[in-house]
Structures are given as C-alpha cells and as structure tokens.
Amino acid sequence: MGAGGLLFIVQVPILYLTRPDFPSIRDWGRTVRGRFSGDKNPVYLQPADLFIVRCLADKLPHTANVLAFDFLVPYFHRQYGIWPTGKHYRPADLAIIPTDDFQGLRKVLPMTQPYRVIRLKSYDLYVSPLYEATVQECIEGK
Image 1 (cartoon, helix red, strand yellow):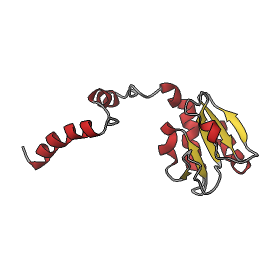
Image 2 (spheres, one colour; image 1 turned 180 degrees about the horizontal axis):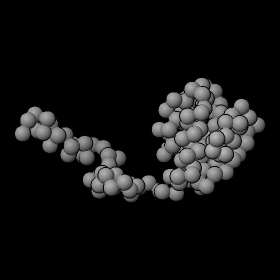
Image 3 (cartoon, one colour; image 1 turned 120 degrees about the vertical axis):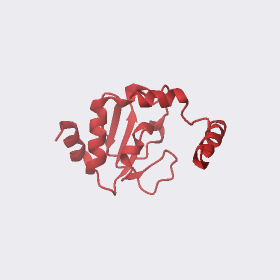
Image 4 (cartoon, helix red, strand yellow; image 1 turned 60 degrees about the vertical axis):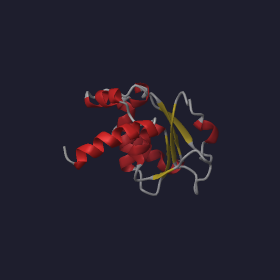
C-alpha cells in the first residue's frame, strides 16, 4: 500500500468524526444506485420542476439576483445567490421557495413589490416584472 492508501485509511475516519454532515456509507451506496439520500425529500426534486429550474438557470443573465431553496442553489452558480440574511446589495429578481416553506423564507423574502407569484408542483416562484417573460418561456417549454 502506498502513501495515498495510507492517507485514505487515516483521513476518512477523521472526516467522519469532525464533519457530522459528511455522507454516511449508506448514503454513498444510495448515490451509486441512483437513489436519493435518506435526508432528501424527493418531493422537492420533481422532474417537471427541475426542468423549469434548469431552464431558468440557463436563460437568466449573470447579473440576475436569485434566492433559491437549498436543493436548487447549485443550478444558479452563474447568478448572484442571495442568502436569507438580509445583507444583499440588491433585491432579488427571482426567488424559488418550496410551497410548504418549512424554513420560513417567505418571512425574509428579499424582493420589492411588484412581483408575481407563480406556483409549480413543489415550489412557488416569486418573479420581478423584468424576468416574467423568461419564466413564462421556461414554463411553456420553449
């Protein structure tokens, strides 16, 4: 066994001790088999909603401000991501919040009126007038 194998054997147990959020061996197995992790609610990962989210991430300009639910943040890596801390430099242009809103994101919604609410299967889209046409294109599948 080389130095890489020895490092792997030493570091993985340390990682599990220091990072409780690190995926368990069972979660790694589920990932390999193409299933969701045990702590992920598949309601938030509906294919129709994810199609719209991917479309929005592709069509929104890089200057757009987006508040996205946790599972959707990676899709919007090109846009400015707003966290619900109240310390954003500009209001959100688009907010994607689950319909059940168990995190209470609606209470700290970083958008200014007017905005339109569009309901998907699992999410509510809060859209500023500037991006309504883009959202409608994605919903219609164009």
